[in-house]
Image 1 (cartoon, rainbow, N blue to C red):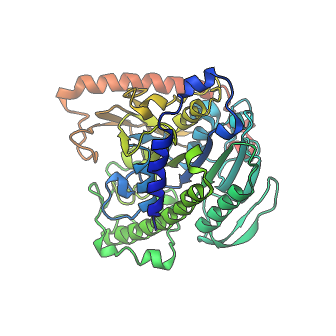
Image 2 (cartoon, rainbow, N blue to C red; image 1 turned 30 degrees about the horizontal axis):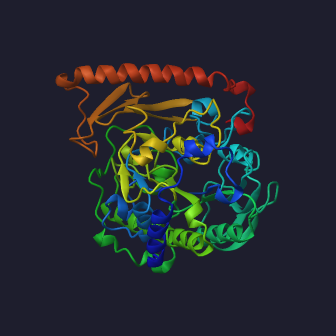
Image 3 (cartoon, rainbow, N blue to C red; image 1 turned 30 degrees about the vertical axis):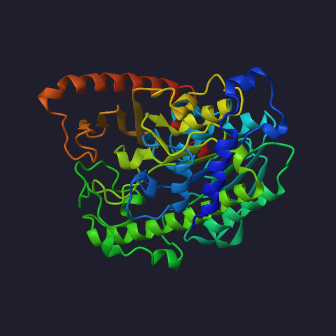
Length: 478
């Protein structure tokens, strides 16, 4: 349901404003006039694989609106999260800080008190900040700096996608909001765009629950995908090898082991149905920006909070440091820089979104933000901002996995198994051939091991500043 007029409008805007002043020049000239200040629309999906978009090369799933966004902006092909579950991922990109520093490395943990937040920083610069959709964090969204809210879903998931309890303001008791949740969230976002304070720039965070399970797309979207025509992942396995020690968690128990190929195809077909339905709702948002004249003055960012395996490596969930768990979708569109239909292969984190948008909006970046601005990567002035990304996953305080990934190699440590895996991602992008014992790569493994050991020590040291012993912990710090 892509609006073809949107492409024409976007192209016209590029011509008209392609020669705008740079961010640095604008800052040097002083604060911009209210009408010139950039708005920010942040759209986040839930459990979406990094390549579950047509623009990412997926030939099956239909995402015309995300494809359009990529054609009018920049798609980052190698974006990652450090911790591949939703609460730590969201806390990281909303604060620009790693979980070891912001206090959130698992569910039920509270962002440490002195942590600046994306919404709070922009609010301090006069932005109206708004949230609708999934909120799966311990501190309230008002504590994160959001001052407008509607149709906020406070849980990690619901029993279905219809008629779910939501709150409208902080402290409300959840009440059922009739309708399909992806549409209900979009309705609230559109209401904000109509009711917003037009004298202030805005930061609107639209956090969808799709395509998180239960995989229950509207019927017409489920019919779009024939399970018999859905290919299995290239790295599908009936049984994980090695057993990572996570097969007892909820996500992995949704289907029995060994994994049935037909069941994986059925689940993937429904998953794609949820993504295509969500894409249509994103189209409503983009159309509203166009119709209201806001598109030429609004940064649009789309990201997924983490990935999902859906049969890859014999797994179902996202609790893995394989690419399927930690690699995520990221598309950014700046309306004034004249960059379109571009891809960037730099290794980036989602927590880089906050400092990037701060730079673009002339907002001072807090000194303790650990993400790095991608402004020069976006325009092509810089090839990247780091040479490696790191990953971790724990079950509460039970340390499970650690990883380091460069542009070519990945080393994964299974801490409970005392085992390492090494993959050459150029030759083996699906991580099927473990090279940990290859003598020709002993030097590579040693170098990555030493870097990962140093990073683990830094992470553990950072956590000592906020993590309490179990005997002193409150229920919200589990």
